[in-house]
Each structure stands twice: as structure tokens, then as C-alpha cells.
Length: 117
Image 1 (cartoon, rainbow, N blue to C red):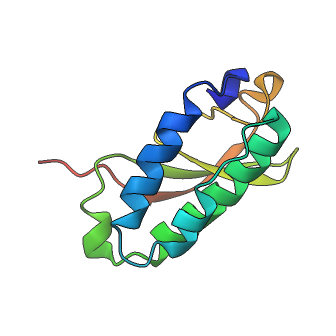
Image 2: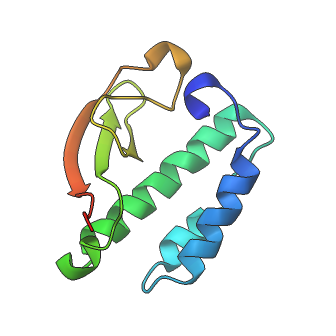
């Protein structure tokens, strides 16, 4: 996880995200941003920030009927130290930009609510 400076799982996560984005309407920006540079952790985090911004914009533009199909809570979270956003599914802040900033940040908005069957 980026919260612990681990990127081993990211190639698989990146593939899942790219596959999902390729099937979604109006998600070209998400698909374009889904390529993460994993040569250095700093570059990975910079690309993750771009991807996060693309996903946040995409979710904000979704019709409410589409948001109701999302299976998880989605929170837009912001770190004032690095001035970057990310999305997470829990209300307690888990900052992906450095382990020493794990709880640094604020929930800016709830983008989607978990859909209940």
C-alpha cells in the first residue's frame, strides 16, 4: 500500500482499474491517468494524485442514478501538506502520500454512498 511505501500490489491494481475504466462511460480521463510510474515511489505517488483527481472529477460528473450503483462509500480526502487529493472508502483518514502523514488530511466530501441491496 502507498500508505506504507509498498507498491508491489500496484501492477495488479492498475490492471484492474484500467480494465474497469475501459468499460465505463465518459471515463477516458480515468483510463488515461491509470498508468502509474512505478520506478520510484515519488513518481508513483505523483501519478496516483493525478489518477485520484481524474476519478474524483469523473465521480462528481456521474448522474445520481449511476452513483447509486457504487458498492462502497467514496470520500474525497485532501492532504494540506502535499496539497493532493485521494479517494478512500472509510471515514478515518489514511494518507497514501507518506507513512509519517498517515492521519494527515481531511475528508472534503462524500462522493458516493454505499449501495445496499
